[in-house]
Image 1 (cartoon, rainbow, N blue to C red):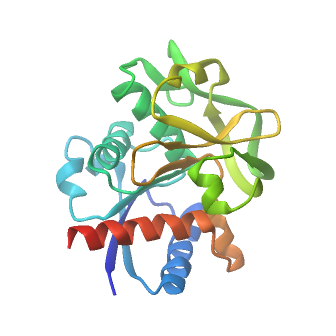
Image 2 (tube, rainbow, N blue to C red; image 1 turned 180 degrees about the vertical axis):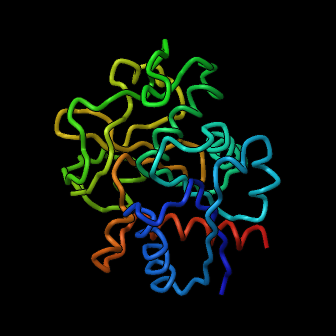
Length: 238
């Protein structure tokens, strides 16, 4: 039985519902798959400048909700490590927002790309306030045909829960044209709700919080798939 280690990148707060749900979600998926899994909360401040060393023992990285983080640099460094080393990566809510920032800055070369919540005066607000805040709301996500996320969920539409007020600024979606980024989910108005990275073993970001299914004692197929990818990396590196 593989023993999989997962880094939960973010600043743990017991009051955050997603932080309560994530260990339960991983536990449910691990039990169903017969996988021995463990996870550690890795604060963003401790990852700035030394993410490679501090995360070297982990098979996968999950960048979790509840941003702004104590250190945006630490979160971005962890995401970059997962992207460049092929470690399975899942970013939910704030984690997905920062994955887009990491790609824009380090792949597209747009160092000025920023988050409007932490830097309201940025000249390139890649992540901006949603046209309609999604705090403790559920909504339909339309999954794009041919994407990995649609294959994982085995559905054209899914109903998901949110706790966020920021997302990809529609004015800058075109920056990713021609890159490895693939939009895999949109809302009814066409705004981006999920994406993935072509050519990477597993790199998926969702504005919604799939971990919340665990609060109803249900597994989410995306978390099942993330854990399976982490187990596969563990086996390959053993």
